[in-house]
Length: 239
Image (cartoon, rainbow, N blue to C red; front, top):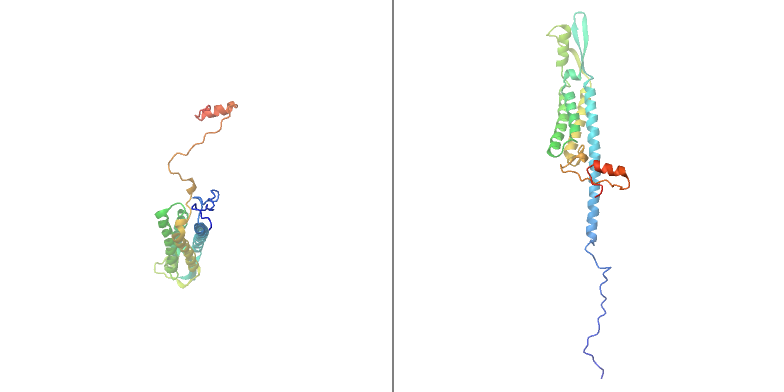
C-alpha cells in the first residue's frame, strides 16, 4: 500500500513579472485606432478648409475684378436724330446702372473683413458677401434691355427733352458682369459653409490680457557688463 501525504503539492504558478505587467499607460488597440482615425479626419478637414479659403479668395477677387472691368464697357448703342442726319450714341455700364460696380466694391470689402472677424460677425459678413454678389448679378441682368441711359444721352445731345434713341442694341457686357457677380456670390456661399473653420487675421497675435511670463536672462558673474544689464532690467544678479 502506497504512502499518501496530507500536504498538498507545491504550486508551480509563475509569479507575474513586474516588467511585463500591463501598466496604466497601456492602451487598447481600439483606442489607438480611434485616435488615428480622428487624426486622419482632422487632417482631411484641415485640407478642405485650406482649399475653401483659397477658392473663396480666388472667386471673390476674380468676380469683383470682372464686374468692375465689365461695368466700364459699352453696354448699349443707338442713334439720335439730328438736323443733318443721325448721331451715334453709346452708354457704358456705369451710365446704365452703377449698382453692380458699387456692390462689387462692397463684396471686396466683405471678402477682406471675413478674415478679420469671428463667430457671428463672420457669419454676417459672409452673408453680406453673398448678397452683394446676388444683388450685382440681378442689377446687371435687369439692365440688359435698359434704354433710359441712351434716351437721356439723346435728349442731352440734341437739346430736345422729347428726343429718343433709335436703333437701340445691347452688347454682351451685362451678361459678363452678371457672371462676375455670380463668382462673388459663390465666394459668399463658401464663406457661409466653411467660414467657421477659417483662420482669423492676426489671430496668432491676440492676447487674453494676462501678463506674459518673463524668463530672466542668464547672468555671468564673471562679466561685469552682464551684471550691469541685469541691474538695468531690475533683476538681482546675485539671486
